[in-house]
Image (cartoon, rainbow, N blue to C red; front, side, top):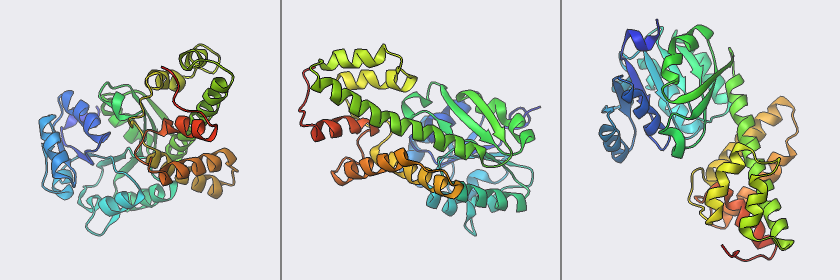
Length: 302
């Protein structure tokens, strides 16, 4: 029997752009979900979405058998979970902590060691996808940690993800998420160069996008980005600043593991340039107008 079947003792810490729709899907499956976020505005949104706001993270997790976290970076995770008065200390033995964010391998390993001391089962479960699809349940997640804990909570993971890939007992899920995000960053860079080259060759904007969409390079990400690019919509689903943060994590993991990541380093500099130009909150596909600028191209005819 799964934990979800035994109790509705579920907490969600971090009701951000990803946390809110994911936690809402769990609540929509009939579970009582206690939620906490430092933002009063996000807590109000949580209430409207069927979650039960708590006054503090400690209040949210006390007595809960399953605790999810969705936090922006290493510093936020350390502060919320590993600090002396952090939520890990409020969790009971044999409860499960499921961390869904993109964070470093190092902080994840720290969390694993602290969880063992508390006799808490810790699952790394970073999700792949963005906020625009999170509410549909079409995310995927990579999971590592105790296999028994994974099997117990898998029905909960299935409420918000179409696939749950178990990878091992340690930090494999962290490496998987960083590897996938590296591919996304490099694809954004390749699309920018390909589109600029096509335009320089006299191919109309819509025609060049159609070429990519119908060719052998038409990955799901390429197809996903064609529609907003058709209308030059660079509203953020995942920002340049977020991609830069993830590339820093990717480069750190590569250095520690002895893997040269030349493309990651190049793309990190590209996103650094975009941030310096004031495009930090623009969608990561802003590599496209960036390359157009470098290539002497203006706005295309739509």
